[in-house]
Image (cartoon, rainbow, N blue to C red; front, side):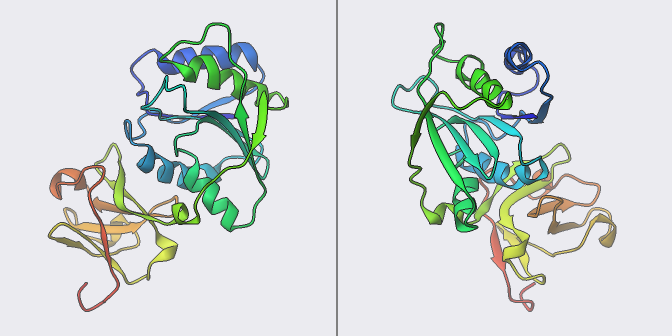
Length: 250
């Protein structure tokens, strides 16, 4: 299985062109669209989002990730990272740092390769199609990465949660980079002047009420029951989120 995670959007031709390469070079491998509206140009937010989403996929899957505002930079490496059997292919720009740092803390087996292979016709602006997709297809077919093994200098601090909004979904719910397992079950969240109480799920609060909860991927999420939290609370990607552990202040 090849899993796609990009900031390309779903309306343009880019995803289709990548899929065409994958279909030609790994025709027997299913391709899953995880997300194509990852935070645009925002590698840090995307890295935390990806780290939360990827555990749902099989251990032998290949994740092709492209959030690459620096595409075309000759100093930026192309990498393939193996973490306990699952491959990650994309730019060496921080997109895979969070999940790699957390895997290292869990003492999982991590191996990194610099992709030294280049196609004859490599565009300056579409490495997702010309470079990363062929490598992902290669790995999905059981071949070795076309490159050299390197050290992956990731700081343990990168594994820490991100106390910001990292994604706003179709409903206007704001996903944060805070893992629910890392805060008290009685904690609430503060965004600007708004203190948002915690609940288990939508039916626990009145229609129109703002609340926060642990979402299906283990992250704290801010919502308004049958409303739009991003609009109602003036939230954007990057909005600062403060955890309040004092139940009296909540």
